[in-house]
Image (cartoon, rainbow, N blue to C red; front, side):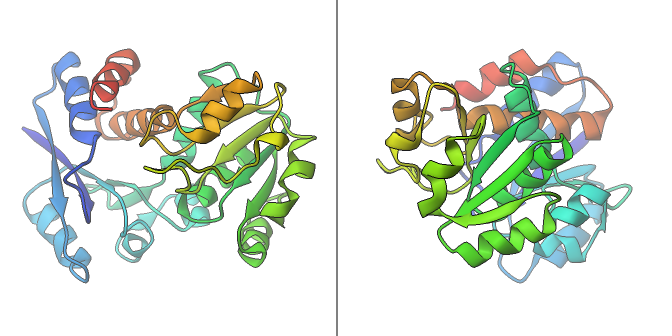
Length: 263
């Protein structure tokens, strides 16, 4: 049996196991997906243990996405982003499928990635999404509560520029895509973007998926914007990991159904 899993802390509420195990079932693979809660300071030992046990691949989540870069070879995109969320343990190579997840979530909804995207947030998710969209040819504009952090990320992303949150109305006036890559709206009735800055010309992706319908998406719906919930990004990053590990095409529809049953 092939074994895949998730390293993180905490991991007990992860939605990844049913997502992946439905794919194994449909592709008739003798495989399981399990979660491993790793104590802080024990990541290297956890990776050594996983290799000793013959585990085939791992996802990595908070708080280890950056730390794990010290212990694996990095593919070019993961190296630029500075974070890993998927590891091929046999090859000892780390990848970042968060960027792929955001891009696929948008293109699956018919969004052309040839204009301007505003990414709110300069943390781990924001970094991955900004690089992913820039690689697709979009002009990326980064807005963050701390302007210097936005500027720092913008210096790393080709063609990007950084701003404070107060610049959002001006930035969104000329944008086609808006992505919330912060945790604002997670389990709270809040949004990082004023509704007055939204318009029907935008596609709005919120990386938050708890709740699935955030205040940002509700307000975007109200002005006629196209909306994409965060579960789509979660789905497609999982699909990319599945394809990386197994070599099979991901059964996207079935994985999406399995995921949304958990939400």
